[in-house]
Each structure stands twice: as structure tokens, then as C-alpha cells.
Length: 165
Image (cartoon, rainbow, N blue to C red; front, side):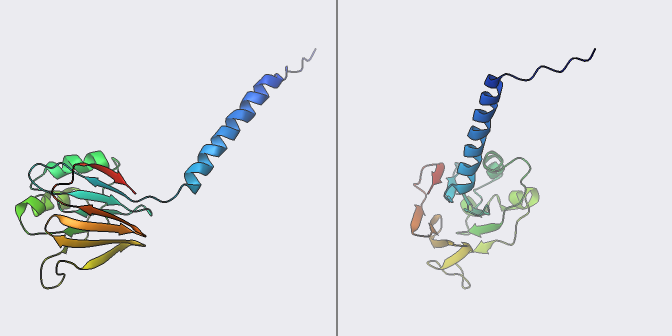
């Protein structure tokens, strides 16, 4: 004699429906969330370094700090498998800003650095990084990152941390 399997109870279907609704809300909130620019200012000893994540997912490294300590900072800020930095800006020529450049170049895929302060790109010049994102280097270690109408200003006195805008 054949026995028909017992159907699930109505309570199971209600719980399943509620779970699917919650999952859909989470997905749509993530998809429709406003685009955000974040900048992480690193503590790399006696030097400067910052990492900008554009709303479109591109990364910009500004300065590399005095030594290989930038690698530890980048390791904490980037995904484990992410070995690409889309743009590299150097705001000065002193070791506090460029000392970790060779270490970054060995570990990450980077384009040639954009160097401010010379004849080609003098201080005060604004350079576009990504759609609606630009950087203006005022002096070594001092710069502004702009996204739309938002502007983040960073100097050597800016405390380490992540700044979303």
C-alpha cells in the first residue's frame, strides 16, 4: 500500500514566506543604497598614507608611508584577494610619503604613480580619479578629495580612521 507524504504545515510556509521577504528587503536595500565615497587614513608611523574607495568600487592610494608598514595597513583595508590599486598619488618626495612605494609595487598591481609638486603637476592642481571623484593636492601630505558636492580635507593632523561621505 502506497502512503502519500505528509505535507508541511501552514506554519512552515508562513515562516518560509517571512524569510524570503526579509531576504528580498536586504537585497534591495543593498542594491538601492546611495553610493558612498570612503577614505581610510592610515597610521603608518611617521608618515602619511590614505586609501580612497570610490562609489564605483575603484581604489586610490595616496602616499605610501615611510616603509613597509603600509602593507599591513592595506591588508586590513582591502579584501584578502584584492591585489589591485587603481590609482596611486604621491604628494611629496620625502621618505615619509614615498618610503613604502617599492613594497606596494611588489605586492600590488599599481599603475605608475601620479607625482604632485613638480613641473608637470604643481600643487593646487585638481586631478579626476573616477566619475565625480577628484583630488587636489595642496602641499605634501595635505589634500582634498571631492565627490559631487562633498569634500574631505586631509592633513598630517587628521586622525587615523575611516571617513565615509
